[in-house]
Length: 256
Image (cartoon, rainbow, N blue to C red):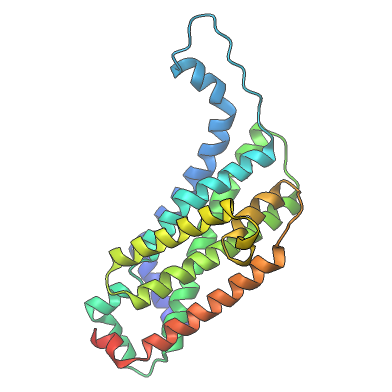
């Protein structure tokens, strides 16, 4: 598995994923605090207000700005993660690389888990760089945030990334085309996030509730449904990993 993991890391470096993915998260992390702080000036300059009109917007709290930054990560950032990982298995399957690797004394579990570990590392590093950029400008322009709040909120969000990476790699195992993986993954993630914001109580037993927990944690509010979301995420991810490895062992996977 260590050899396969190094191979995945090298491929990610050669395709510049270690450059452009963190840069996207950094851009998102910087954009939200700057936009929140300079919004009154932007509206005054480009809002088409009549001369002499006064348009005052209260400065948001630092916790609210970080929560809005997480919202940006949940929308554009998740799209970037799906885009980066959609061809991890489907691409190698269609190109014939998978059959060359699995023809050697390599276990199917090592083959999948190496890609899963590399994908998780890429997603978490990208998130941490983006969060660090956001916190720098939040501390610069707004009030500081307690480290405990940021840490707890980030843990919930990284669990959401765990679910996202596992889902994309599971779909990349089951579907033959990378475009189908991206489409199905984005639809599932968007529907899950929307359903969790609309049907709060029943959706606490789903990974989608992790996004709400992340926002609640940064604002020091009650974490309703914490264990429900954590347990369901671990169970769902374990089932998807087991299912993907089991499907890899079928002869028609490499022949397809």
